[in-house]
Image (cartoon, rainbow, N blue to C red):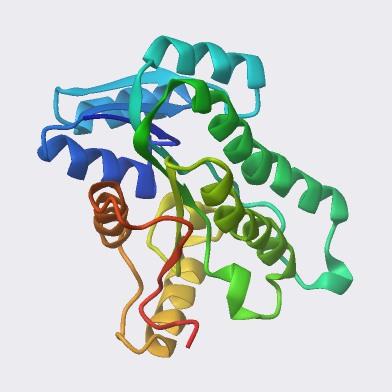
Length: 233
């Protein structure tokens, strides 16, 4: 089984690579930052390969995917932190940048991979529960992630028998939150942990386990799987 994880140098992508490598999958991760790539490969099993790829560069993605052919499963964990904030103060240029960091790179990666995907394989997008929580300050993030999620069922029909799903995480302790100072981040995590019925925030491994299930279960397609500790209830 050959798996490509786009955005696999940190957070959810990194945890997924570690889990699948333990299950003897052939895993290749991508990322833009050479230092992050070096650190990720040092932390992962020896059977994981890596290559620096710019998810915003369509030609670069196409060349990378062609070199990986054939691919059984694709996980797209490309993301960015732009687009948050109360709407009346939201810098729309930052929202555009948020789409440029996540929405379009995820679609470009999927489109570039299609000619090289196994017909009975799968693609898993990583979105966010912000698409459905209706929390103040997240309208821009909801737009980015909601746009991806709205496409999933239609893509599953268009691209069948290739399976297309998305995992929609809640608040997960990953480097995505590093835009906040440490004390603010810790207070934010504590607040979300109290609000979630499970009483904690998530770990990257919580999401990786669901991604692995979607890869293995050949009877799931067109679904958005929410993994948020009940935060959106």
